[in-house]
Amino acid sequence: MDSTQGSAADGSVARGPLDGVVVLDLTRVLAGPFATMMLRDLGARVIKVERVDVGDDSRGFGPFVGERSAYFASVNAGKESIALDLTAPADRAVFERLLGIADVLVENFRPGAMDRLGFGWADVHARHPGLVYAAVSGFGQTGPYSPRPAYDMVVQGMGGVMSVTGEEGGDPVRVGVSVGDITAGLFLVSGITAALYERRATGEGMMVDVGMLDCQVAILENAVSRYTVEGVVPGPIGSRHPFIAPFAALRTGDGRLVVAVGTDVFFADLCAVLGVPELVDDPRFVTNRDRAQHVGDLHAALEQALAARSTAEWLTDLEAAGIPCGPVNDVAAVLADPHVRARNMVLEVDDPELGPLRVAGNPIKLSGYPEPLVRPAAPALDADRAALLAELGLA
Image (cartoon, rainbow, N blue to C red; front, side):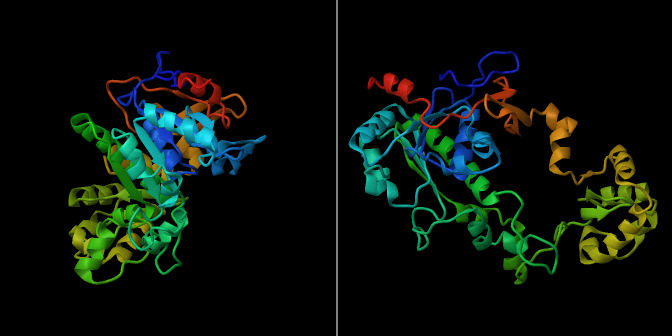
């Protein structure tokens, strides 16, 4: 296993179930790098193959500390870097040798780009039949939109996610994090691990084709069933749920809190804590279906009661009663949350230029492996060329 893997809590080298798996990462910006970051967190060795002189586009994205991008560092920690020009014969030869030691190739070029270079799925599979070839693109390898470029916001818009996000009656709103990229990265990891599992039985690699638009359609969840059953096109409804009530961010005396009441028992408990037990027998609110049909009246009644005290005071009583609830945290509050910290969901990247950079941890907790508390630094462009060439016998 590669020596760049992070240290576990007990000081040992952190391993994972993908220990020994070598990933060639030709991706840039977010969807692909997020996927290979997850693979690296699960134990894989990730060799980032970047463009000569430029590298990953996100090396130029802020925020910066000096000349170093914290954006790039946050999703590329612990990877290795070699810069190659895949049109140059000498670099093509190096890349071919890298393919020979790899288990997985991940790329996010537009469909056809790798074929023109002679490194598309058919060509690579013929030469390296055990290699898993994973491609993530805006619209996938087939279909009429396949050649188009795409970014996160494009697929959020085209995939319907923006149309159901925001306040009721308002304009379509982009989700505040890059769910177009991140969901594609997560689905890509699932496909890669499934392909690696299949290879154990057959010895054959396969192609994993993930389109960002497909992933947005896949997460439309109840919006699809609402449309197909009711024939009404869903629109934005703010923080509330279309079929469960109360299930929303409600105003208090000094802010908002979230309540997620999915049963009649929880609703009765909520009304007891808020001092409005009469709402339980109100014919508008007897069942969840009743409450969802009269959600405006319900929220008004609950917020009238909640206005009497602060968010913190209500949360103390609601939590004591076992009612699903929580604050509406900003990012600073999330990073300081004691439960988030206890779950190691805030890690540091040990970067000599950026200093201790705080990043989100890995939500996958595995009983058989120690969890690293620190990630090693992201590589400088082409930082590992000499070591990789020596390993390949090309030094």
